[in-house]
Image (tube, one colour):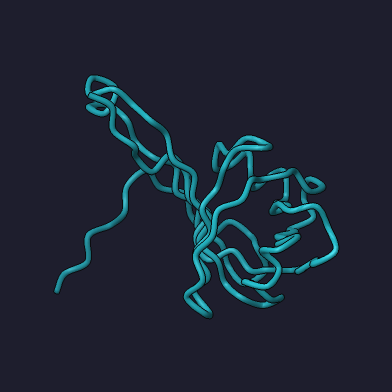
Length: 126
């Protein structure tokens, strides 16, 4: 059996650019891609915290250290500068791999600076 699990997440990334007249993709600071383990051209899911939009695109590498999160092409209709996004990638694993797998979760502030990195989502008390 194969299962699809969360591989990586950039949590609350702040959109810096929204470029409608650009070939579709999401440009992400290369250092943030590396921190999360997301590869250039890898499929990503984007969840817009500001407006509830959810869409699929692929990651492209923006300049290292630029803090850029640019939603491009048709997806630019779904996110505006200042919106906060959750950017996720997923992996298909077999049952044996699932036992030891841990995702990479990267938490960002409003300036797209890393504030924390984890390998599990903390459980919050009700």
